[in-house]
Picture 1 (tube, helix red, strand yellow):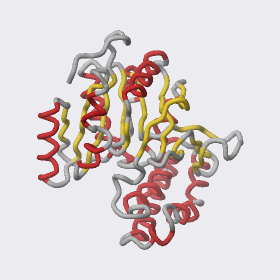
Picture 2 (cartoon, rainbow, N blue to C red; picture 1 turned 45 degrees about the vertical axis):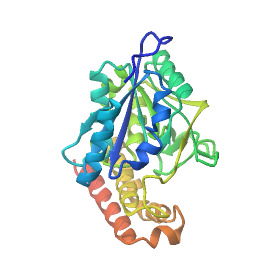
Picture 3 (cartoon, helix red, strand yellow; picture 1 turned 180 degrees about the horizontal axis):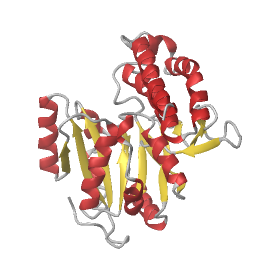
Length: 306
């Protein structure tokens, strides 16, 4: 990698990208060669590989060796949060002043990277994300909230009430080094999905803030890491499970039980995402919804019995 650029006191942003399977998406989007070259040394790239097929890992190893990326080879697939934590640890050990967790199918341009690094230095107790756009220019994420009453999520501004709590997506999430250490990164228990809601919640509880840089944008090839149309069974299972896992970890018993009672309705809403026919027509979809909900209910039941 190039030496750190001037203008930010030699500060660097550790760009952590978690890969699973074929690295083609990652190399076409997040780590496009021309895009990374434009970062000018401000971004220290850490690629984390959750193992899948040997040929995919071999390809990634060769690319990282040739391009000078830090590569963390996970012995087992512990999920997105565990991979991001391992990558952030490598970036912080390398002296980075902040980390940005970046989806493999997201595109972080040099001016945005520079602004996000400056933001992290100016706001050391804040999680920050830019607006996330689809490839056609429409908005994919511009803030969101979680209802602590019933466990539903919505885009910001679509509802109001005292029970709403904001959260930021991990598609492109910047965390200053000291705040990452304080919060302990993502909670590995989530495996996939809801780990960003959990981290946002813990940041707020610790007295930190959430910042949406509405003046900055990152393009996200939505669904680029999933195969086919509709939502995958992996998405269905973990979305249902992890909503209830969050309730078990963070909410009073009565509220967690209320979320549990609403679990069947929530599972139906998740199954309709991405189009009912496209999602529910996928093999294993119904099993994933039922299994994820059941696993989450076990989490709530265990918390209630403590």
